Amino acid sequence: MKALILVGGFGTRLRPLTLSFPKPLVDFANKPMILHQIEALKATGVTEVVLAISYQPEVMLNFLKDFESKLGIKITCSQETEPLGTAGPLALARDILADETGEPFFVLNSDVISEYPLKEMIAFHKSHGGEASMLVTKVDEPSKYGVVVTEESTGKVERYVEKPKIFVGNKINAGIYLLNPSVLDRIELKPTSIEKEIFPKIVSENQLYAMVLPGYWMDIGQPKDYITGLRLYLDSLRKKSQSKLASGAHIIGNVLVDDSAKIGEGCLIGPDVAIGPNCVIESGVRLSRCTIMRGVRIKEHACISSSIIGWHSTVGRWARVENMTILGQDVHVCDEIYSNGGVVLPHKEIKASILKPEIVM
Image 1 (cartoon, rainbow, N blue to C red):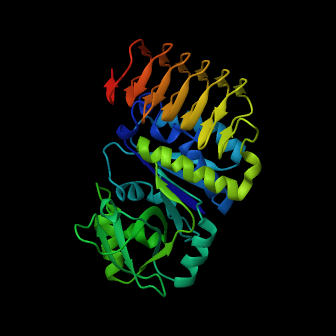
Image 2: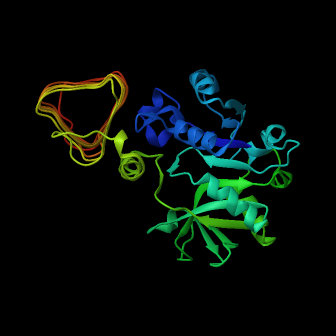
Image 3: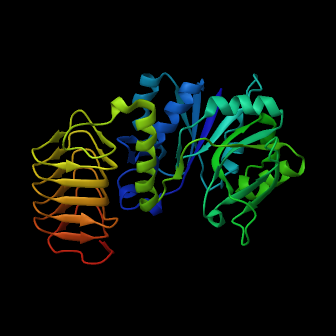
């Protein structure tokens, strides 16, 4: 079986992190976002993953070559010379996706995290016999998304409405599809939206079915949703494999700590924290609802909440970092500095407090 991951553009919503790495290689819960998806696909029996990419393909491929051999899965890039939307990349990769087996293939949006119930999705796809299956999830605020109206008993999609102005339902497109190769015959090699142009045609022929996603779902393409996504991911990890989470007197709630990280005396860590490889957390530090990426040093008595600390950065003694502060790679926050929602580009030294949310160039 094969799969295509829509990697796409520049990751502007996750800057300054994406100034250092393409978005799919930004760490989420201590490993690159895209690796969560590739591992789930491998576990389902997928043997080849195609990355549809328009930005820095060589960086992606060089990085993922290591994982090819570790995971035993073939990873190739299909490079767009112009942005092709969400359907055009399928036409570009047609020769790889449509092989002699005639098997359906997965398509995933690279920003989406969930429990990836891909085996259940294959069974669902076989059971309804339609041309295409999609996962849907229920949300409180559907107007930002593509809303899917289904027949309750079968899951057959009756209507697909992209970003509706009035309420039509609360099930939204979760960005994970299983498609028969015949869908490729509907797509031309030009900029095309699978949501706005291809799915409505398939719906009109009663060939699109939707399965409600069990468990959590999040599009982690922007910082606030990334932090929420981490909470949902760690909640799910506690239910599935609690032994991977940290425990001890200094831990509150769900915390993920890489084995190589060092944590000092008298710290209080959690809830909803990920601490990456080779981090040093000095004594008396307080961390909550945050991600501390590879190689970061947090000095004594610093306090960090609801923030993302990029690779190899340093936060000084008694500093306070909060309210969706995002530090890019190699940022140095001096002692006793306060950051209230600062978004700091890579390789900066912060010597004065950031009192209101702003970008520090």
